Length: 524
Image 1 (cartoon, helix red, strand yellow):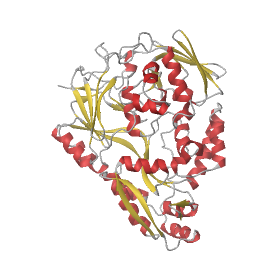
Image 2 (tube, one colour):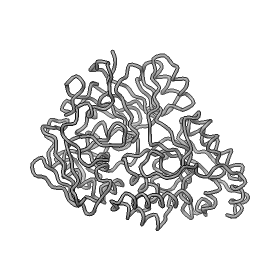
Image 3 (cartoon, rainbow, N blue to C red):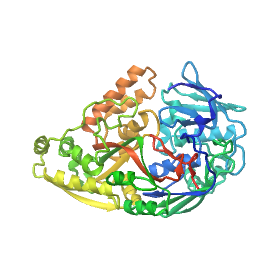
Image 4 (spheres, helix red, strand yellow):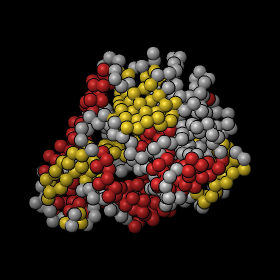
């Protein structure tokens, strides 16, 4: 990844998906079906993909991720350069840019936003920019001073939590604490991105309208976005989302079940997309010694290994993804930088699984439970398969179908037993997923209670290591430790399945998960 971007980049690089020879058309409202609603639209304090993948349409960062998710392109900053000693970053703030209320985006807003993002008291994402020591400005020249060298600092400046918010509006919001102000502000946010929140009927719909003051230019030389509005309809049931798309009630639908992909590829009027991703599917296990006042079998490493060996991942891939997925070779996706591994983790071995259960003292198995998202065909398919597979080693699995807010709350509280989970990188660097999965100080290794002192130290060291070879060795060892004893059952990695009306053009879901509607348009 380069460390210098020059202001003269062609405009097309700013605009997202190439629109080819088609002439863009302006206007209209795109209706997009989501499996679950957002929870909290604050860039710093959120912690869920249902928020993250919407935030990129409301807020811009100084640097934006490239369309392939691997590089950088100008955002609110036109250029940037890391100092030769690696201890500072110089950026130039774009001239004439405004928030959605027409007020200027100033260097003061940038300084305040970045310091808020780096504040260790604010949320869980501050680790991405924990190297920031100070932010200063001279006119439109921004200088970020670092506490130590940070090999991921430029990639971190593309992540949602470094989005630029209006300092005065946020601080004027009611509340005594940052969190109280964030909750009030995020109900009626002022945008720096292509869209503005118009209304939000929680659990049902969210309506965005175009930001009339957005800085980026479209193919026709006029300001983006092309759309007048964007409506997100919350439709948890997969089949209903697809029916509404087929009937023309909505123009896009996320998380299409893999069992329907081939069918929708042949359907009239539908463009079935499989966007490249860093998405992994897995089961998170709560490995605390006790749960609900009772001894927890999942705290036994041999039990976790047995559960892994008992899962025929290839069979699940065939049944659930219809061979769209592939087995995981590490806890991070094969597209994540510094991934290591060329063999599937815990290849199916039922006899080894039974032997490990006996060694662990659970030859007769035990009862346990798994949180499953109600109405999600893929999750239900996975859970049903696990119920049968784990039954062969004496584990009786209760499937608890719940809605997303309920599951999320149990997960955050650390009161869950097991949950189905999916992860997508938000940064073109392994530090994010390692912090979330491996590094216990962040959120106790996915709220699981798992901890490795060696892995924690390796992560701390990797955050300052600018020698690429040494950093790669640190991540290789972290993966070795976690893959052997970590609190997950890795299942598969897959592309993003999104179905669109053929009248939709320019939409992109980048490998980091962001849904990019800024350059989307509707063919009349």
